[in-house]
Image (cartoon, rainbow, N blue to C red; front, side, top):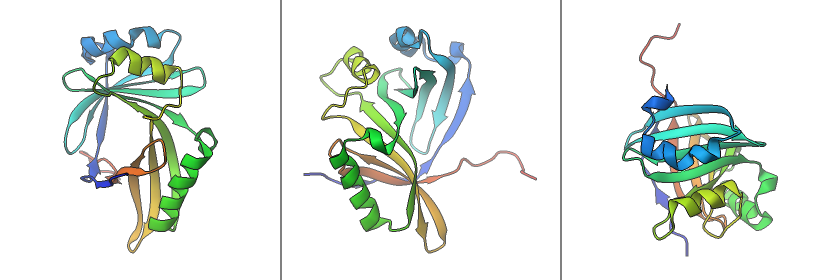
Length: 181
C-alpha cells in the first residue's frame, strides 16, 4: 500500500564548486566510478531544508548524478532515462496518476533513482546503480509542469518501482541575487 507525501516546496540553489571543496570522504566512495567519465562537475546544493553535495558526469550514454548529505553520506544515485526505459506497468501507473491529478501536463525529465537504504552497503547501492539494474526498490523522479489556474507550475514527483506516488512538491526556480535586465 503506497502512502503519498506532499512535501515542502522546493527552492533549490545549485553552485558549482571545485573538486577540492567536495567532501573527501564522498569523493573516495565514487572515485573509481569517475574513471573514463566525461564532463565531471561538482556542486553544492542548498534547498529549503538541507545542504548537500553532488557530482554530475556522463559515463557511456548515461548522465549520472550522485548526491551526498552534508556529512558526506550517500543519499542517492540517479541517471536520466526516457519513458521507454521504464517497465510498461510502471510507466502506465505514472501516466494514470498524472492524467488523474494533472490533466494538462508535460514531463520534462525522468531519472531512475537508487536511494541509499538502511541495511545495504554504500558499495552495493553504487554497484546496483552503475550496473543499471531494475530492482524492486528503485525509484523514478519526474520533473513535470502542469497547467494551474494561474499558469504553469513545475513539480518534482517521486514514484516507486510500481509507479505509485511517494512524494510530490512544487518546484520553484532559484532566486537571483542580482538584477536581471
